[in-house]
Image (tube, rainbow, N blue to C red; front, side):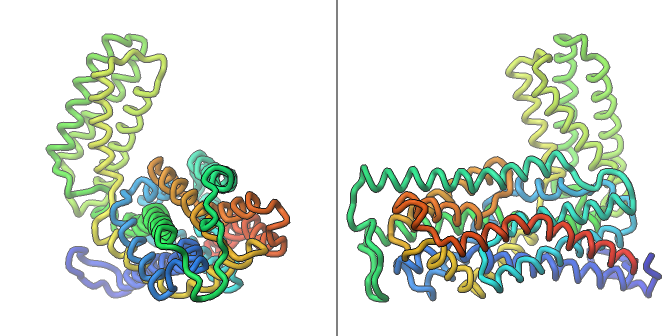
Length: 472
């Protein structure tokens, strides 16, 4: 492992090894860089349609999109971020030296950045979500090789994988249906006009429609993709500073105890109605008692005890949810409501992100949106179809993308903005003129990137984990 260098004392952190501090700062730089790249790599999808339909000039569209990406991260919650965290063996990382966590984090982030920059340079729309998930699987496999155990939460990976696979299929199909509706029911000729030059701008109501859809895609992209950066930054903070970030110390202990007490009271009623579940209920009751004792002895400087409280709260919460979902248990609606309330309070303790973390990711994503956007925009606007985007195609693809991303965020699932919007544009092109309206060469490149992203990012992260592990 790393040799000890001179320790220094920092405010809010305490004494820290200088070399560990440098690695920590490098990890922070990597996650900011990843979100910055994500900004100009993925968000270019949102501005492509308004630029190529002449609804907005690039000088206005790009900062506008960046601002709503920023806002989306701020109000999007942390459900997707916590889903990302659950992919890796966080609890196991917390009891190992911080260098191990650093190996995983740096491997994941560098692998993601390398692949994203490569596909951006070639102007190929590629999913940052797929890249990140693949890199996290690769890092998890490296962890399993060296330390054993479950390095990857395959259940969560499968859930996320299905979301990433089904979302573009839904986007394509929904875009086809919406375009056919506009074509055969609305029948507005102005909607299907193709801009012929820089001064050929859409009518005011169409322009407002396109600007609205661009705004929605930008906002929901921030609320979904931005959360991935929040999850990564929380992974770094928990790995390096578990005593301060493993649980949310801003939640008063008495609120946690109240939620645990209410759970125990509800368990007594549940036991009367479900005597066959006595062992499970008594086990949970005993765990809650232990959790309250550990919570009373906890302080913000003891990582081992903080880590123990985190695991106990997570186990209590998981068991409560299991009781609620168990069809063999008889639980009245009022008691289920009590369980749900307690579960929500306990979730706040472990699934959180400080406001400065969200602000850091928001700013990185927003600035990234304003830089380097043009390569992807050209592909989206000019090369997926064999003709220039008309107004209906632009609006259709973005309405479908915004709806899909928004729903995914609501369910706490990561989804690929790139895949959904590209599929939506392809669907709108097919609805307009059949498959002959698609550019086979561009679609082949996009498909190859989609197919290669997962295995390449897994291999990159795994290789980097092995490389970095030699030096720790």
